[in-house]
Image 1 (cartoon, rainbow, N blue to C red):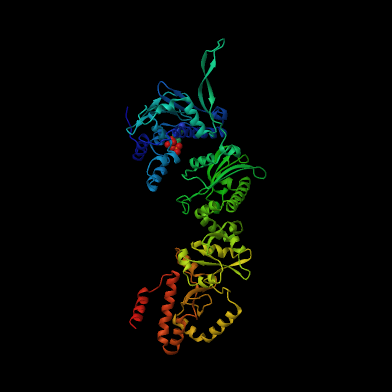
Image 2: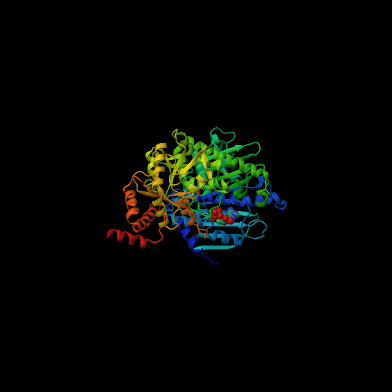
Length: 627
Ligand code: ADP
Protein backbone atom coordinates (compact mmCIF):
# COMPACT_ATOMS: atom_id res chain seq x y z
CA UNK A 1 0.00 0.00 0.00
CA UNK A 2 1.17 3.47 -0.85
CA UNK A 3 2.43 5.61 1.98
CA UNK A 4 1.52 9.26 1.61
CA UNK A 5 3.55 12.13 2.95
CA UNK A 6 2.39 14.78 5.36
CA UNK A 7 2.57 18.43 4.38
CA UNK A 8 5.70 20.17 5.59
CA UNK A 9 4.24 22.10 8.49
CA UNK A 10 2.20 19.12 9.68
CA UNK A 11 5.39 17.16 9.77
CA UNK A 12 6.94 19.82 11.93
CA UNK A 13 4.04 19.71 14.38
CA UNK A 14 4.06 15.92 14.41
CA UNK A 15 7.74 15.82 15.18
CA UNK A 16 7.12 18.20 18.02
CA UNK A 17 4.37 15.95 19.37
CA UNK A 18 6.27 12.71 19.08
CA UNK A 19 9.37 14.03 20.78
CA UNK A 20 7.55 16.19 23.23
CA UNK A 21 8.80 16.25 26.77
CA UNK A 22 5.60 17.98 27.74
CA UNK A 23 4.49 16.77 31.13
CA UNK A 24 0.75 17.02 30.66
CA UNK A 25 0.45 14.54 27.84
CA UNK A 26 -2.92 13.57 29.23
CA UNK A 27 -4.52 16.38 27.23
CA UNK A 28 -4.51 14.14 24.14
CA UNK A 29 -7.76 12.72 25.42
CA UNK A 30 -9.34 16.14 25.83
CA UNK A 31 -8.46 16.96 22.23
CA UNK A 32 -9.85 13.75 20.78
CA UNK A 33 -13.02 13.96 22.85
CA UNK A 34 -13.49 17.55 21.80
CA UNK A 35 -13.21 16.53 18.14
CA UNK A 36 -15.69 13.73 18.71
CA UNK A 37 -18.09 16.13 20.37
CA UNK A 38 -17.78 18.60 17.49
CA UNK A 39 -18.50 15.81 15.02
CA UNK A 40 -21.59 14.78 16.98
CA UNK A 41 -22.67 18.39 17.22
CA UNK A 42 -22.66 18.58 13.46
CA UNK A 43 -24.85 15.54 13.01
CA UNK A 44 -27.08 16.49 15.90
CA UNK A 45 -27.60 19.91 14.43
CA UNK A 46 -28.54 18.30 11.14
CA UNK A 47 -30.95 15.94 12.87
CA UNK A 48 -32.89 18.86 14.29
CA UNK A 49 -33.93 20.04 10.87
CA UNK A 50 -33.64 16.84 8.86
CA UNK A 51 -35.80 13.90 9.93
CA UNK A 52 -33.97 11.49 7.67
CA UNK A 53 -31.01 11.49 10.05
CA UNK A 54 -33.25 9.44 12.31
CA UNK A 55 -31.43 10.12 15.56
CA UNK A 56 -32.43 11.69 18.85
CA UNK A 57 -30.22 13.62 21.18
CA UNK A 58 -30.06 10.62 23.51
CA UNK A 59 -28.66 8.40 20.78
CA UNK A 60 -25.42 10.30 20.54
CA UNK A 61 -22.45 9.20 22.56
CA UNK A 62 -18.70 9.03 22.79
CA UNK A 63 -17.33 5.70 23.85
CA UNK A 64 -13.90 5.18 25.35
CA UNK A 65 -12.69 1.61 25.47
CA UNK A 66 -9.57 0.12 26.83
CA UNK A 67 -7.64 -2.97 25.85
CA UNK A 68 -4.76 -3.38 28.24
CA UNK A 69 -3.35 -6.49 26.62
CA UNK A 70 -3.12 -4.89 23.21
CA UNK A 71 -2.14 -1.52 24.69
CA UNK A 72 -4.94 0.35 22.93
CA UNK A 73 -7.42 3.07 23.78
CA UNK A 74 -10.31 3.54 21.37
CA UNK A 75 -12.35 6.70 21.14
CA UNK A 76 -15.53 6.22 19.11
CA UNK A 77 -18.23 8.67 18.22
CA UNK A 78 -21.41 8.42 16.19
CA UNK A 79 -21.06 11.87 14.73
CA UNK A 80 -20.81 13.16 11.21
CA UNK A 81 -17.72 11.14 10.24
CA UNK A 82 -15.20 11.88 7.52
CA UNK A 83 -15.03 11.07 3.84
CA UNK A 84 -11.80 9.83 2.30
CA UNK A 85 -10.94 13.38 1.22
CA UNK A 86 -11.72 14.74 4.63
CA UNK A 87 -9.52 12.16 6.28
CA UNK A 88 -6.67 13.20 4.05
CA UNK A 89 -7.23 16.91 4.26
CA UNK A 90 -8.23 17.27 7.88
CA UNK A 91 -5.73 14.91 9.41
CA UNK A 92 -2.91 15.76 7.04
CA UNK A 93 -2.87 19.44 7.81
CA UNK A 94 -2.98 21.65 10.83
CA UNK A 95 -6.34 23.22 11.39
CA UNK A 96 -5.18 25.65 14.01
CA UNK A 97 -2.19 26.64 11.99
CA UNK A 98 -2.29 29.89 13.93
CA UNK A 99 -0.84 28.12 16.90
CA UNK A 100 2.41 27.33 15.15
CA UNK A 101 2.72 30.88 13.88
CA UNK A 102 2.13 32.00 17.38
CA UNK A 103 4.96 29.94 18.69
CA UNK A 104 7.52 31.25 16.25
CA UNK A 105 6.32 34.81 16.51
CA UNK A 106 6.26 34.99 20.26
CA UNK A 107 9.28 32.85 20.74
CA UNK A 108 7.75 31.01 23.62
CA UNK A 109 10.62 28.62 23.49
CA UNK A 110 9.53 25.27 24.73
CA UNK A 111 6.56 23.43 23.32
CA UNK A 112 5.03 23.46 26.76
CA UNK A 113 3.03 26.62 26.32
CA UNK A 114 1.54 25.95 22.95
CA UNK A 115 0.47 22.41 23.74
CA UNK A 116 -0.93 23.16 27.14
CA UNK A 117 -2.74 26.37 26.44
CA UNK A 118 -3.96 25.98 22.91
CA UNK A 119 -4.11 22.28 22.43
CA UNK A 120 -2.96 21.05 19.10
CA UNK A 121 -5.87 18.88 18.19
CA UNK A 122 -5.66 15.48 16.66
CA UNK A 123 -1.87 15.34 16.46
CA UNK A 124 -1.56 15.34 20.23
CA UNK A 125 -2.49 11.66 19.97
CA UNK A 126 1.10 11.08 18.87
CA UNK A 127 2.41 12.24 22.22
CA UNK A 128 1.30 8.92 23.70
CA UNK A 129 0.83 6.63 20.71
CA UNK A 130 3.19 4.72 18.49
CA UNK A 131 0.44 3.98 16.00
CA UNK A 132 -2.78 5.88 15.35
CA UNK A 133 -5.63 4.35 13.38
CA UNK A 134 -8.66 6.38 12.37
CA UNK A 135 -11.65 4.51 10.98
CA UNK A 136 -14.38 6.75 9.75
CA UNK A 137 -17.58 6.69 7.78
CA UNK A 138 -19.11 9.97 6.72
CA UNK A 139 -22.81 10.44 7.28
CA UNK A 140 -24.69 9.65 4.07
CA UNK A 141 -21.80 7.72 2.54
CA UNK A 142 -21.62 3.97 1.87
CA UNK A 143 -17.92 3.47 2.20
CA UNK A 144 -15.75 3.71 5.29
CA UNK A 145 -12.02 4.40 5.27
CA UNK A 146 -9.13 3.64 7.51
CA UNK A 147 -6.31 6.13 7.98
CA UNK A 148 -3.20 4.95 9.72
CA UNK A 149 0.09 6.49 10.73
CA UNK A 150 3.09 5.78 12.90
CA UNK A 151 4.26 9.35 12.74
CA UNK A 152 6.40 11.54 10.53
CA UNK A 153 7.02 8.91 7.89
CA UNK A 154 3.55 9.40 6.47
CA UNK A 155 0.20 7.69 6.48
CA UNK A 156 -1.82 5.11 4.59
CA UNK A 157 -5.46 5.17 3.70
CA UNK A 158 -7.70 2.33 2.52
CA UNK A 159 -11.25 1.14 2.50
CA UNK A 160 -12.50 -0.68 5.55
CA UNK A 161 -15.63 -2.13 7.09
CA UNK A 162 -17.64 0.03 9.43
CA UNK A 163 -21.38 -0.20 9.66
CA UNK A 164 -22.47 3.05 11.28
CA UNK A 165 -21.42 6.58 10.44
CA UNK A 166 -18.98 8.16 12.82
CA UNK A 167 -15.34 7.88 13.72
CA UNK A 168 -13.24 5.48 15.71
CA UNK A 169 -9.75 6.43 16.78
CA UNK A 170 -7.52 3.64 17.98
CA UNK A 171 -4.36 4.62 19.82
CA UNK A 172 -1.61 2.09 20.26
CA UNK A 173 0.04 3.38 23.40
CA UNK A 174 3.83 3.79 23.45
CA UNK A 175 5.94 1.48 25.58
CA UNK A 176 7.27 2.78 28.86
CA UNK A 177 10.63 4.48 28.71
CA UNK A 178 13.01 5.33 31.54
CA UNK A 179 11.58 8.82 31.79
CA UNK A 180 7.97 8.23 30.93
CA UNK A 181 5.39 5.76 32.12
CA UNK A 182 2.89 5.47 29.31
CA UNK A 183 1.22 2.53 31.02
CA UNK A 184 -0.71 4.92 33.20
CA UNK A 185 -2.97 5.74 30.25
CA UNK A 186 -4.05 2.12 30.17
CA UNK A 187 -5.52 2.40 33.65
CA UNK A 188 -9.25 2.83 33.75
CA UNK A 189 -9.33 5.13 36.78
CA UNK A 190 -6.68 7.35 35.22
CA UNK A 191 -8.73 7.83 32.05
CA UNK A 192 -11.85 8.48 34.09
CA UNK A 193 -10.13 11.21 36.03
CA UNK A 194 -8.72 12.82 32.87
CA UNK A 195 -12.20 12.87 31.36
CA UNK A 196 -13.69 14.47 34.44
CA UNK A 197 -10.91 17.01 34.62
CA UNK A 198 -11.06 18.30 31.06
CA UNK A 199 -14.23 17.10 29.42
CA UNK A 200 -16.85 17.20 32.10
CA UNK A 201 -19.00 19.78 30.34
CA UNK A 202 -19.08 17.99 26.97
CA UNK A 203 -22.76 17.90 26.09
CA UNK A 204 -22.87 14.30 25.01
CA UNK A 205 -22.28 11.32 27.27
CA UNK A 206 -18.73 10.04 27.37
CA UNK A 207 -19.15 6.39 28.25
CA UNK A 208 -16.76 3.77 29.48
CA UNK A 209 -17.11 0.14 30.35
CA UNK A 210 -16.08 0.30 33.94
CA UNK A 211 -14.95 -2.73 35.83
CA UNK A 212 -16.40 -3.24 39.31
CA UNK A 213 -16.21 -5.95 41.92
CA UNK A 214 -19.01 -7.49 43.87
CA UNK A 215 -19.41 -10.28 46.36
CA UNK A 216 -20.15 -13.55 44.72
CA UNK A 217 -23.63 -14.66 45.61
CA UNK A 218 -23.76 -17.29 48.28
CA UNK A 219 -20.18 -16.79 49.41
CA UNK A 220 -18.65 -15.05 52.38
CA UNK A 221 -15.49 -13.55 50.97
CA UNK A 222 -15.33 -14.40 47.29
CA UNK A 223 -15.50 -11.58 44.81
CA UNK A 224 -16.28 -11.46 41.13
CA UNK A 225 -15.73 -8.81 38.52
CA UNK A 226 -18.48 -7.31 36.45
CA UNK A 227 -18.58 -4.61 33.86
CA UNK A 228 -21.00 -1.74 33.59
CA UNK A 229 -21.22 0.97 30.96
CA UNK A 230 -21.17 4.31 32.74
CA UNK A 231 -21.34 7.92 31.75
CA UNK A 232 -18.26 9.65 33.10
CA UNK A 233 -19.01 13.32 32.46
CA UNK A 234 -21.69 15.43 34.12
CA UNK A 235 -22.61 16.91 30.71
CA UNK A 236 -23.51 20.21 32.27
CA UNK A 237 -21.78 23.05 30.50
CA UNK A 238 -19.86 25.22 32.91
CA UNK A 239 -22.11 28.20 32.26
CA UNK A 240 -25.15 26.21 33.34
CA UNK A 241 -23.59 25.20 36.62
CA UNK A 242 -24.14 27.08 39.82
CA UNK A 243 -21.61 29.70 40.71
CA UNK A 244 -20.97 28.14 44.08
CA UNK A 245 -19.92 24.88 42.44
CA UNK A 246 -17.20 26.66 40.52
CA UNK A 247 -13.81 27.95 41.52
CA UNK A 248 -11.83 30.71 39.84
CA UNK A 249 -9.58 28.02 38.50
CA UNK A 250 -12.48 26.27 36.73
CA UNK A 251 -13.49 29.50 35.09
CA UNK A 252 -9.95 30.35 34.07
CA UNK A 253 -9.15 26.92 32.68
CA UNK A 254 -12.28 27.00 30.61
CA UNK A 255 -11.41 30.47 29.36
CA UNK A 256 -7.90 29.61 28.30
CA UNK A 257 -8.94 26.48 26.48
CA UNK A 258 -11.92 27.93 24.80
CA UNK A 259 -10.62 31.33 23.82
CA UNK A 260 -7.00 30.46 23.17
CA UNK A 261 -5.41 32.78 25.66
CA UNK A 262 -2.41 31.87 27.74
CA UNK A 263 -3.00 34.39 30.49
CA UNK A 264 -5.74 34.23 33.10
CA UNK A 265 -8.48 36.76 32.49
CA UNK A 266 -8.83 39.77 34.77
CA UNK A 267 -12.37 38.87 35.56
CA UNK A 268 -15.10 36.43 34.73
CA UNK A 269 -18.73 37.45 34.59
CA UNK A 270 -21.21 34.64 35.06
CA UNK A 271 -24.84 35.63 34.83
CA UNK A 272 -28.15 33.86 34.70
CA UNK A 273 -30.93 36.22 33.83
CA UNK A 274 -34.64 35.79 33.60
CA UNK A 275 -37.21 38.33 32.63
CA UNK A 276 -37.37 40.34 29.45
CA UNK A 277 -34.30 38.51 28.25
CA UNK A 278 -33.69 35.00 29.50
CA UNK A 279 -30.15 33.78 29.10
CA UNK A 280 -27.02 32.40 30.70
CA UNK A 281 -23.81 34.14 29.92
CA UNK A 282 -20.22 33.48 30.79
CA UNK A 283 -18.04 36.38 29.83
CA UNK A 284 -14.44 37.31 30.45
CA UNK A 285 -12.38 40.45 30.52
CA UNK A 286 -8.97 39.47 29.20
CA UNK A 287 -5.83 40.78 30.86
CA UNK A 288 -4.08 41.64 27.64
CA UNK A 289 -5.25 42.90 24.30
CA UNK A 290 -4.93 40.25 21.60
CA UNK A 291 -2.11 41.11 19.18
CA UNK A 292 -4.58 42.08 16.48
CA UNK A 293 -7.01 43.88 18.79
CA UNK A 294 -6.37 47.37 17.53
CA UNK A 295 -6.41 46.33 13.86
CA UNK A 296 -9.11 45.90 11.28
CA UNK A 297 -8.59 42.14 11.37
CA UNK A 298 -9.96 41.81 14.89
CA UNK A 299 -13.46 40.38 15.02
CA UNK A 300 -15.53 41.06 18.09
CA UNK A 301 -18.35 38.86 19.26
CA UNK A 302 -19.64 36.31 21.73
CA UNK A 303 -20.42 32.70 21.03
CA UNK A 304 -24.13 32.24 20.75
CA UNK A 305 -25.92 29.09 21.88
CA UNK A 306 -29.59 28.32 21.51
CA UNK A 307 -30.36 26.15 24.47
CA UNK A 308 -26.97 24.53 24.55
CA UNK A 309 -26.44 24.23 20.81
CA UNK A 310 -23.83 26.47 19.28
CA UNK A 311 -25.40 28.54 16.53
CA UNK A 312 -22.79 31.20 15.95
CA UNK A 313 -19.14 31.45 16.84
CA UNK A 314 -18.81 35.22 16.89
CA UNK A 315 -22.05 37.05 17.24
CA UNK A 316 -20.97 40.66 16.82
CA UNK A 317 -24.40 42.08 17.58
CA UNK A 318 -24.08 41.04 21.19
CA UNK A 319 -21.32 43.53 21.97
CA UNK A 320 -21.02 47.25 21.39
CA UNK A 321 -17.69 48.26 19.83
CA UNK A 322 -16.49 49.87 23.00
CA UNK A 323 -16.80 46.56 24.84
CA UNK A 324 -15.41 44.52 21.96
CA UNK A 325 -12.66 43.16 24.22
CA UNK A 326 -15.15 40.96 26.08
CA UNK A 327 -14.85 37.26 25.32
CA UNK A 328 -17.40 34.66 26.16
CA UNK A 329 -20.67 33.07 25.33
CA UNK A 330 -24.38 33.52 25.65
CA UNK A 331 -26.88 30.70 25.85
CA UNK A 332 -30.57 31.45 25.53
CA UNK A 333 -33.73 29.42 25.31
CA UNK A 334 -35.46 32.27 23.56
CA UNK A 335 -33.60 31.88 20.32
CA UNK A 336 -34.59 29.65 17.46
CA UNK A 337 -32.03 27.16 16.19
CA UNK A 338 -32.63 27.86 12.56
CA UNK A 339 -32.21 31.53 12.74
CA UNK A 340 -29.97 32.96 10.04
CA UNK A 341 -27.32 35.61 10.52
CA UNK A 342 -29.44 38.15 8.69
CA UNK A 343 -32.50 37.41 10.76
CA UNK A 344 -30.53 37.54 13.99
CA UNK A 345 -29.71 41.17 13.42
CA UNK A 346 -33.37 42.02 13.58
CA UNK A 347 -34.26 39.61 16.30
CA UNK A 348 -35.96 41.42 19.15
CA UNK A 349 -34.83 38.85 21.69
CA UNK A 350 -31.24 39.18 20.65
CA UNK A 351 -31.39 42.93 20.98
CA UNK A 352 -32.78 42.65 24.46
CA UNK A 353 -29.99 40.26 25.38
CA UNK A 354 -27.40 42.61 23.90
CA UNK A 355 -28.77 45.52 25.92
CA UNK A 356 -28.70 43.51 29.08
CA UNK A 357 -25.15 42.33 28.39
CA UNK A 358 -23.95 45.86 27.83
CA UNK A 359 -25.40 46.89 31.16
CA UNK A 360 -23.84 43.92 32.91
CA UNK A 361 -20.39 44.59 31.51
CA UNK A 362 -20.63 48.24 32.44
CA UNK A 363 -21.66 47.37 36.00
CA UNK A 364 -18.89 44.84 36.37
CA UNK A 365 -16.28 47.31 35.17
CA UNK A 366 -17.64 49.92 37.55
CA UNK A 367 -17.43 47.44 40.41
CA UNK A 368 -13.90 46.49 39.42
CA UNK A 369 -12.88 50.14 39.42
CA UNK A 370 -14.39 50.68 42.82
CA UNK A 371 -13.30 47.52 44.57
CA UNK A 372 -10.24 46.24 42.76
CA UNK A 373 -8.43 49.32 41.59
CA UNK A 374 -5.20 47.59 40.58
CA UNK A 375 -6.99 45.10 38.43
CA UNK A 376 -9.01 47.85 36.84
CA UNK A 377 -5.87 49.76 35.99
CA UNK A 378 -4.42 46.64 34.42
CA UNK A 379 -7.57 46.34 32.38
CA UNK A 380 -7.48 50.02 31.50
CA UNK A 381 -3.92 49.82 30.28
CA UNK A 382 -4.98 47.12 27.85
CA UNK A 383 -8.34 48.46 26.74
CA UNK A 384 -8.67 52.09 27.87
CA UNK A 385 -8.00 53.23 24.35
CA UNK A 386 -11.09 51.38 23.20
CA UNK A 387 -13.23 53.09 25.84
CA UNK A 388 -11.93 56.50 24.81
CA UNK A 389 -12.57 55.72 21.17
CA UNK A 390 -16.08 54.74 22.26
CA UNK A 391 -16.65 58.15 23.81
CA UNK A 392 -15.56 59.84 20.61
CA UNK A 393 -17.28 57.67 18.02
CA UNK A 394 -20.92 57.85 16.93
CA UNK A 395 -20.93 61.59 17.64
CA UNK A 396 -20.59 60.96 21.35
CA UNK A 397 -23.75 58.92 21.56
CA UNK A 398 -22.31 56.67 24.26
CA UNK A 399 -20.36 59.18 26.24
CA UNK A 400 -22.61 59.01 29.27
CA UNK A 401 -22.24 55.25 29.47
CA UNK A 402 -18.48 55.49 29.36
CA UNK A 403 -17.41 58.70 31.05
CA UNK A 404 -17.07 57.20 34.51
CA UNK A 405 -14.86 54.41 33.22
CA UNK A 406 -12.24 56.78 31.84
CA UNK A 407 -8.91 57.42 33.49
CA UNK A 408 -6.02 59.75 32.82
CA UNK A 409 -2.65 60.15 34.44
CA UNK A 410 -2.74 63.27 36.52
CA UNK A 411 -0.11 65.68 37.83
CA UNK A 412 -1.41 64.75 41.24
CA UNK A 413 0.94 61.88 42.19
CA UNK A 414 1.47 60.84 38.56
CA UNK A 415 -1.24 58.20 38.83
CA UNK A 416 -4.28 57.26 36.82
CA UNK A 417 -7.32 59.10 38.14
CA UNK A 418 -10.97 59.12 37.18
CA UNK A 419 -12.80 62.28 36.22
CA UNK A 420 -14.93 61.91 39.29
CA UNK A 421 -11.85 61.89 41.48
CA UNK A 422 -10.50 64.97 39.74
CA UNK A 423 -13.69 66.94 40.12
CA UNK A 424 -14.21 65.89 43.71
CA UNK A 425 -10.94 67.53 44.74
CA UNK A 426 -11.19 70.63 42.56
CA UNK A 427 -10.51 73.82 44.44
CA UNK A 428 -13.39 76.08 45.23
CA UNK A 429 -12.21 78.81 42.89
CA UNK A 430 -11.40 76.35 40.11
CA UNK A 431 -13.58 76.66 37.04
CA UNK A 432 -12.06 74.11 34.72
CA UNK A 433 -10.70 70.60 34.48
CA UNK A 434 -7.22 71.31 33.14
CA UNK A 435 -5.38 69.04 30.77
CA UNK A 436 -2.17 69.09 28.76
CA UNK A 437 -1.33 67.07 25.69
CA UNK A 438 1.93 65.63 24.41
CA UNK A 439 3.76 62.58 23.22
CA UNK A 440 4.81 61.44 26.66
CA UNK A 441 4.35 62.45 30.24
CA UNK A 442 7.94 63.65 30.46
CA UNK A 443 7.39 65.91 27.49
CA UNK A 444 4.15 67.25 28.84
CA UNK A 445 5.71 68.05 32.18
CA UNK A 446 8.35 70.20 30.54
CA UNK A 447 5.85 72.15 28.46
CA UNK A 448 6.02 75.88 29.25
CA UNK A 449 2.23 76.04 29.25
CA UNK A 450 1.82 73.75 32.24
CA UNK A 451 3.98 75.94 34.42
CA UNK A 452 1.58 78.52 35.78
CA UNK A 453 -1.37 76.16 36.18
CA UNK A 454 0.77 73.71 38.09
CA UNK A 455 2.38 76.48 40.08
CA UNK A 456 -0.98 77.73 41.23
CA UNK A 457 -1.66 74.24 42.50
CA UNK A 458 -4.23 73.03 40.01
CA UNK A 459 -4.26 69.38 39.03
CA UNK A 460 -3.54 68.68 35.36
CA UNK A 461 -4.56 65.61 33.38
CA UNK A 462 -1.81 64.39 31.09
CA UNK A 463 -3.11 63.30 27.69
CA UNK A 464 -0.66 61.15 25.76
CA UNK A 465 -2.81 59.22 23.27
CA UNK A 466 -3.98 60.66 19.98
CA UNK A 467 -7.59 59.99 20.81
CA UNK A 468 -7.53 61.62 24.26
CA UNK A 469 -8.24 65.23 23.42
CA UNK A 470 -10.89 64.27 20.88
CA UNK A 471 -12.63 62.23 23.54
CA UNK A 472 -12.56 65.08 26.03
CA UNK A 473 -13.83 67.55 23.43
CA UNK A 474 -16.68 65.17 22.78
CA UNK A 475 -17.45 64.98 26.48
CA UNK A 476 -17.23 68.80 26.66
CA UNK A 477 -17.65 68.70 30.43
CA UNK A 478 -17.87 66.38 33.38
CA UNK A 479 -20.43 67.11 36.06
CA UNK A 480 -20.80 70.56 34.54
CA UNK A 481 -17.08 71.26 34.80
CA UNK A 482 -15.63 72.15 31.42
CA UNK A 483 -12.36 70.74 30.16
CA UNK A 484 -9.63 73.23 29.40
CA UNK A 485 -6.34 72.71 27.66
CA UNK A 486 -3.44 74.52 29.29
CA UNK A 487 -2.40 75.42 25.74
CA UNK A 488 -5.58 77.03 24.55
CA UNK A 489 -7.51 80.23 25.12
CA UNK A 490 -8.02 81.92 28.44
CA UNK A 491 -7.21 79.74 31.45
CA UNK A 492 -8.84 82.09 33.87
CA UNK A 493 -6.35 81.58 36.66
CA UNK A 494 -5.26 85.16 37.30
CA UNK A 495 -6.39 87.45 40.06
CA UNK A 496 -8.34 90.56 38.95
CA UNK A 497 -5.23 92.67 39.61
CA UNK A 498 -3.08 90.43 37.43
CA UNK A 499 -5.69 90.69 34.71
CA UNK A 500 -5.64 94.47 34.83
CA UNK A 501 -1.89 94.58 34.63
CA UNK A 502 -1.75 92.30 31.62
CA UNK A 503 -4.41 94.26 29.85
CA UNK A 504 -2.51 97.49 30.32
CA UNK A 505 0.79 95.98 29.21
CA UNK A 506 -0.83 94.42 26.16
CA UNK A 507 -2.18 97.74 25.04
CA UNK A 508 1.16 99.45 25.55
CA UNK A 509 2.88 96.90 23.33
CA UNK A 510 0.13 96.39 20.80
CA UNK A 511 2.08 97.90 17.91
CA UNK A 512 5.10 95.72 18.53
CA UNK A 513 2.99 92.56 18.70
CA UNK A 514 1.25 93.49 15.46
CA UNK A 515 4.61 94.05 13.85
CA UNK A 516 5.79 90.61 14.97
CA UNK A 517 2.60 89.02 13.69
CA UNK A 518 3.17 90.59 10.26
CA UNK A 519 6.74 89.34 10.34
CA UNK A 520 5.36 85.82 10.59
CA UNK A 521 3.27 86.40 7.45
CA UNK A 522 0.07 84.59 8.29
CA UNK A 523 1.56 81.75 10.32
CA UNK A 524 -0.02 82.93 13.54
CA UNK A 525 -3.33 84.52 14.31
CA UNK A 526 -1.81 86.72 16.96
CA UNK A 527 1.29 87.49 18.96
CA UNK A 528 0.33 88.37 22.49
CA UNK A 529 1.39 88.71 26.08
CA UNK A 530 1.16 85.41 27.92
CA UNK A 531 -0.80 84.79 31.06
CA UNK A 532 0.30 81.21 31.54
CA UNK A 533 4.08 81.50 31.66
CA UNK A 534 6.28 81.95 34.65
CA UNK A 535 9.94 81.28 33.90
CA UNK A 536 9.71 80.27 30.24
CA UNK A 537 10.16 83.06 27.67
CA UNK A 538 7.45 82.12 25.18
CA UNK A 539 5.09 79.38 24.01
CA UNK A 540 2.72 78.47 21.23
CA UNK A 541 -1.00 78.12 21.95
CA UNK A 542 -4.19 78.05 19.97
CA UNK A 543 -7.50 79.86 19.91
CA UNK A 544 -10.70 78.20 18.80
CA UNK A 545 -11.84 74.59 18.75
CA UNK A 546 -8.89 72.99 17.04
CA UNK A 547 -5.85 72.51 19.26
CA UNK A 548 -2.25 72.14 18.14
CA UNK A 549 -2.35 68.48 19.14
CA UNK A 550 -5.53 67.86 17.16
CA UNK A 551 -4.01 69.56 14.13
CA UNK A 552 -1.04 67.22 14.43
CA UNK A 553 -3.21 64.10 14.76
CA UNK A 554 -5.61 65.00 11.97
CA UNK A 555 -2.89 65.98 9.55
CA UNK A 556 -1.08 62.72 10.17
CA UNK A 557 -4.08 60.85 8.79
CA UNK A 558 -4.12 59.88 5.15
CA UNK A 559 -6.30 62.62 3.71
CA UNK A 560 -5.87 65.63 1.46
CA UNK A 561 -7.90 67.84 3.75
CA UNK A 562 -5.26 69.37 5.93
CA UNK A 563 -6.51 71.37 8.88
CA UNK A 564 -4.97 74.39 10.55
CA UNK A 565 -5.19 75.45 14.18
CA UNK A 566 -5.37 79.15 14.97
CA UNK A 567 -1.90 79.49 16.41
CA UNK A 568 -0.92 82.17 18.89
CA UNK A 569 2.64 83.05 19.86
CA UNK A 570 2.66 84.09 23.49
CA UNK A 571 5.48 86.06 25.09
CA UNK A 572 6.32 86.22 28.78
CA UNK A 573 6.67 89.87 29.80
CA UNK A 574 8.63 88.89 32.92
CA UNK A 575 11.38 87.28 30.88
CA UNK A 576 14.48 89.12 29.68
CA UNK A 577 13.66 88.29 26.09
CA UNK A 578 10.66 90.60 26.25
CA UNK A 579 12.81 93.64 27.05
CA UNK A 580 15.10 92.63 24.22
CA UNK A 581 12.18 92.54 21.78
CA UNK A 582 11.00 95.93 22.98
CA UNK A 583 14.39 97.47 22.47
CA UNK A 584 14.73 95.96 18.99
CA UNK A 585 11.33 97.37 18.07
CA UNK A 586 12.74 100.82 18.74
CA UNK A 587 16.20 100.32 17.24
CA UNK A 588 16.37 97.48 14.72
CA UNK A 589 13.08 96.32 13.17
CA UNK A 590 14.85 94.06 10.67
CA UNK A 591 16.37 92.11 13.52
CA UNK A 592 13.04 91.93 15.35
CA UNK A 593 11.57 90.37 12.22
CA UNK A 594 14.20 87.66 12.25
CA UNK A 595 13.85 87.10 15.98
CA UNK A 596 10.10 86.72 15.60
CA UNK A 597 10.70 83.96 13.09
CA UNK A 598 13.24 82.35 15.38
CA UNK A 599 10.85 82.41 18.33
CA UNK A 600 8.07 80.96 16.25
CA UNK A 601 10.20 78.11 14.92
CA UNK A 602 11.44 77.29 18.40
CA UNK A 603 7.89 77.21 19.69
CA UNK A 604 7.04 74.68 16.99
CA UNK A 605 9.95 72.52 18.11
CA UNK A 606 8.75 72.62 21.71
CA UNK A 607 5.33 71.46 20.58
CA UNK A 608 6.82 68.61 18.57
CA UNK A 609 5.53 70.04 15.31
CA UNK A 610 7.90 69.57 12.43
CA UNK A 611 9.33 72.79 11.05
CA UNK A 612 9.11 73.77 7.42
CA UNK A 613 12.69 74.77 6.75
CA UNK A 614 15.20 73.40 9.26
CA UNK A 615 18.13 74.59 7.16
CA UNK A 616 16.99 78.18 7.23
CA UNK A 617 16.45 77.89 10.97
CA UNK A 618 19.92 76.54 11.48
CA UNK A 619 21.43 79.27 9.31
CA UNK A 620 19.73 81.93 11.40
CA UNK A 621 21.16 80.44 14.58
CA UNK A 622 24.64 80.40 13.07
CA UNK A 623 24.26 84.00 12.07
CA UNK A 624 23.39 84.79 15.66
CA UNK A 625 26.38 82.85 16.94
CA UNK A 626 28.71 84.91 14.78
CA UNK A 627 27.28 88.20 16.02
P1 ADP B 1 -9.45 21.14 15.14
O1 ADP B 1 -10.26 20.23 15.97
O2 ADP B 1 -8.93 22.31 15.88
O3 ADP B 1 -10.10 21.55 13.85
P2 ADP B 1 -7.84 18.80 14.75
O4 ADP B 1 -6.45 18.61 14.25
O5 ADP B 1 -8.12 18.25 16.09
O6 ADP B 1 -8.11 20.34 14.70
O7 ADP B 1 -8.84 18.16 13.74
C1 ADP B 1 -8.79 18.50 12.40
C2 ADP B 1 -10.11 18.24 11.73
O8 ADP B 1 -10.33 16.84 11.57
C3 ADP B 1 -11.32 18.71 12.48
O9 ADP B 1 -11.57 20.07 12.23
C4 ADP B 1 -12.43 17.83 11.90
O10 ADP B 1 -12.89 18.36 10.65
C5 ADP B 1 -11.70 16.57 11.63
N1 ADP B 1 -11.94 15.60 12.71
C6 ADP B 1 -11.12 15.31 13.73
N2 ADP B 1 -11.66 14.38 14.53
C7 ADP B 1 -12.87 14.08 14.02
C8 ADP B 1 -13.94 13.18 14.37
N3 ADP B 1 -13.88 12.43 15.47
N4 ADP B 1 -15.03 13.15 13.56
C9 ADP B 1 -15.11 13.93 12.45
N5 ADP B 1 -14.15 14.77 12.07
C10 ADP B 1 -13.04 14.85 12.84
